[in-house]
Length: 283
Ligand SMILES: C[S@@+](CC[C@H](N)C(=O)[O-])C[C@H]1O[C@@H](n2cnc3c(N)ncnc32)[C@H](O)[C@@H]1O
Image (tube, rainbow, N blue to C red):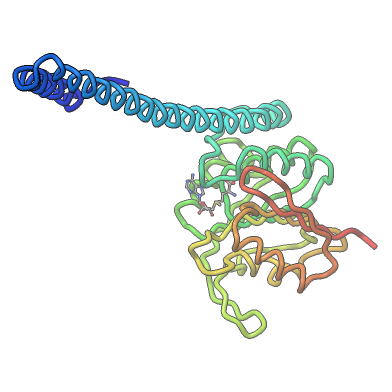
């Protein structure tokens, strides 16, 4: 806490005022006039003490806030590091992977996807919204020695980018990105925009569906059509996992899905961005 120019001017001004008052009252009232100087000095000292306390309080709050922000940041870094370590140790990528930045699934969800693939050994994974997750899923399938992943991508630029990423990691035999622009659908009399599935050739049931697109800005409940449209491709057993489970839109969407498709069990995953898991077991 430093003295500002304004503070120095106030102190100097008070001292000058005090001296003038002191001399004036001494000349006018004699020695008893000095009492006025003592009272004024006490008032000034008390004001300075209160002001110092006030400023120290503000400064202490600021330091506390900064410290708690840094602590949160550190916790986030730690939370993001552990899943990445376990992910990389398991899939052993031969080449550098892009940073799972803001647009991508967070490391804890990527780790969850890895655990599901290794445990459930899906033969066919369909993903909506391509990126780092597509490559991770393909690496996991390579690790278990079987299975394919098809990712639907509405954006031509990112369809190319994600396919290049797959090629860079030599995973073209496992993963495919389909450029599927958003087109109109009619679901129960309501209009929706969702991926064009005309290029999506599904020859066996979908075992795992990863819902991470289209982006929220597309429409309200942007990812809702995934289930009604792909439902016919599900077998007796399917797992659906979706990112961004903390968002109101996604919470509402899952509620609607659970109402419309009551055979699914549901679990909310407390991950960085929240995730939802719906699954249907063989009867
Ligand atoms: C929620 S992200 C999906 C990301 C993907 N599932 C993942 O975890 O990496 C939605 C959209 O981000 C876009 N995207 C893909 N790669 C990107 C990149 N490198 N930078 C910015 N956006 C990207 C794509 O259009 C994708 O459909």
